[in-house]
Length: 208
Image (cartoon, rainbow, N blue to C red; front, side, top):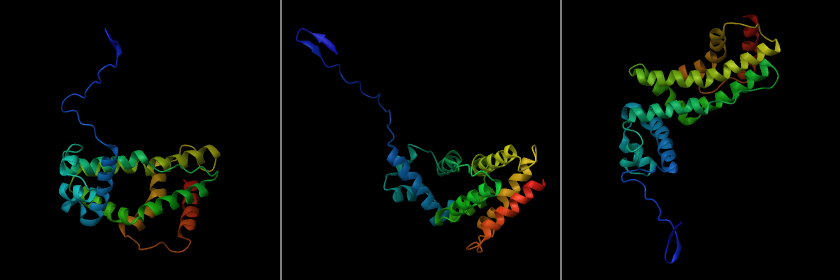
């Protein structure tokens, strides 16, 4: 408040500095969703800022105010996957933890958009070191981080040997499902596959 001869007066509202942009979160989220849909529809090579803006229902300027190129946009989206992560199972047994982890991961990998986007980005990563590093970080901080928590919990319970090779353990846990869902892109998992995989992986980890 300010005061003059007429008594207290409301303090003038401060204006935002000229050129200061207030980025609406709903617009940002709409653009991020459009990126996934555009990647699934046309792939990274054919994806354009124009197509993303059209799909998000915004102007190109709204995209460029947030990211300076489609590469930086995709890098940001991929990196955000690591932040979201997967919940670490805590069922009380290694095999049950693995079963829950596999069920969640399998659903995520087989999502219609993810099943198109992940192979395309992997192919692009072979040509683009920045995308390759972003994908490695997303996997390392996301899936691998959860798998390590599963192994650590099993170590505390005495189900596996303390100090086992964590890199080998991660390969055993993550390899089979990614091979089926991402590499050979099996249309569907055989009946009972996740239960059998959980049991086999748990026994393999106990043998390390």
